[in-house]
Image (cartoon, rainbow, N blue to C red; front, side, top):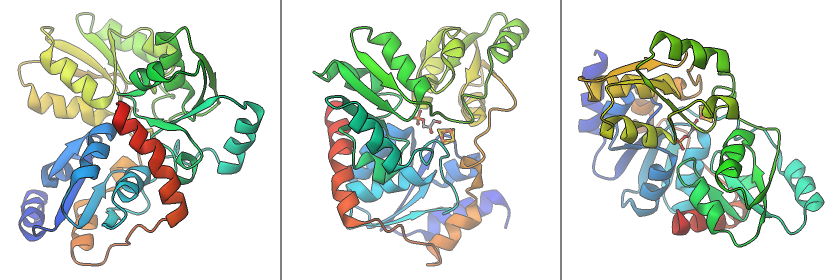
Length: 302
Ligand code: 13P
Ligand code: SF4
């Protein structure tokens, strides 16, 4: 079976009680096989409402955890159990607890790219598309933002009245992109608008014409009257836009812009979950209960 046939086979065989969710960074054949695709926030929202009892997450572990936390009674499978987000797993609960003890009275805001165990000791979660709005609505001026210092710095730049304490964490893929690479891309494509994900370094985001989440970037490019764009996030977004907007031109900010974990997911992984060979995601019930509060808070305010 070739990829297209396998993708069609998966859609036919999966039955009415299984839902396949895919993050927009997933490879094209996975996107084609999914019922729902979207950014982290869209997937979190969907996770709350799905009626299917089995959910296969094509993405990284924290995304599958979010589905499980919001629907504890469902059977949730991470299509490839090795797909983790290095940023989400960067800081231990003990370390964050120590920082919280150092900064009593701060509201702890956790990027959704964190483990369930970190969410469990946070006050509210945010995604890249909801971070500014949610932080703006927090009454407390003092915020401890974990773990991404780049997204946190972007929020701080938009909310100068807040006192936002940042830690030294971030996405190894986005934060590896340099100002020099952005300058080179702009020089090579002088008519293109630069669109950047806020996980990039502040110096790179400062050069952008638009800063936003993966779906924010896609919506901006589709709605914009401009014809040419440099896409400053994982290269699958530029590729999807190339197919979806054939009349416009899209360039990679860097050929290095690839998340290796997102690319671990394959169609045979999805197929083996459908065949009953997947590893069901199991979380500690106390952690799940505690982690649900900040996620619900995010959905209420996002
Ligand atoms: P989004 O919130 O834009 O989906 O981003 C998730 C992510 O992992 C970005 O690296
Ligand atoms: Fe995690 Fe970065 Fe990959 Fe997003 S791109 S899943 S933040 S490692």
